[in-house]
Amino acid sequence: GESVGLHLPTLSVQEGDNSIINCAYSNSASDYFIWYKQESGKGPQFIIDIRSNMDKRQGQRVTVLLNKTVKHLSLQIAATQPGDSAVYFCAENKNSGYSTLTFGKGTMLLVSP
Amino acid sequence: NAGVTQTPKFQVLKTGQSMTLQCAQDMNHEYMSWYRQDPGMGLRLIHYSVGAGITDQGEVPNGYNVSRSTTEDFPLRLLSAAPSQTSVYFCASSYSAVGFEQYFGPGTRLTVT
Image 1 (cartoon, each protein chain N blue to C red):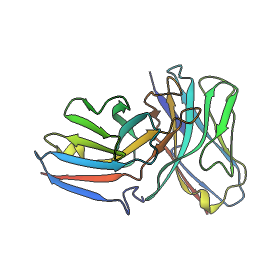
Image 2: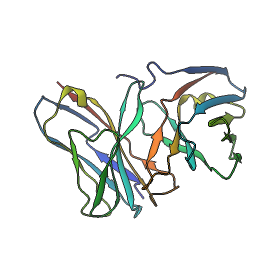
Image 3: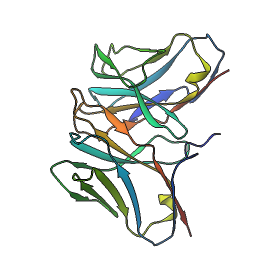
Image 4: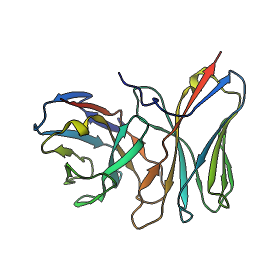
C-alpha cells in the first residue's frame, strides 16, 4: 500500500549512532509538545512530551529539547536500533481554547544494521 | 484494556456512497478526535469531542459528521463519499483535552473510487 513516508525528509543512520530529529513549530503561544513514532501500517505511538516551562526532558534512550526563542523542538535517540526505523512526528498544542494538537509533516528515520 | 479500536480496517466506497467509521475506547477518556493522514501532509484534525454530547470542528471538517452520545464511542460519518476523502483515518483519545498524550487507534484505510 501507499506509504505515509512518501515525500518526507529522511534521516539515515547506522545502528548504534545517535539520531537527532528536528522540528520547527509555528505558534509562540504553544504550551505543550509531543513526539510520536509511527511504524508502517500502524497508528502513531507516544514517545515523549514536554511542557513549555521546561527546556529538556529525558526518557529511556530519548531526550526532547525545546528552544522557545527560535520555536524549535528536537528529539534525540541514543544508540539507535533498527527497531527505531519509523516516521517521527512532532505535535504542538496551540493553546487556543480547547486543546487540539497540530502535527508536523514528519521525518522518516532509517536505521541500517 | 483494548485501548482505542477502529473498524473497519479497510474500506472501498464508490463516489456518493455513505458510511460510518467506528471508534471506541475503554479508558474512560473524555477527549476523542478524528484525524486523516495523507502522504506528505502529516495528520490533520477533522473533528473532536471534549465529552459526551460535545463536538467541534477541526482543520478539515467538510464532508464529515460526528456525534458523541457516550463516553466510549465517537463515530465518523461520510454522508456522500468523494475521491478526495481517500485517506487513512485515525481515531485518538486522551484523558483530558489539555496537555495529555493522545492514544491512537490502528487506523482505517479508505479508498473512494
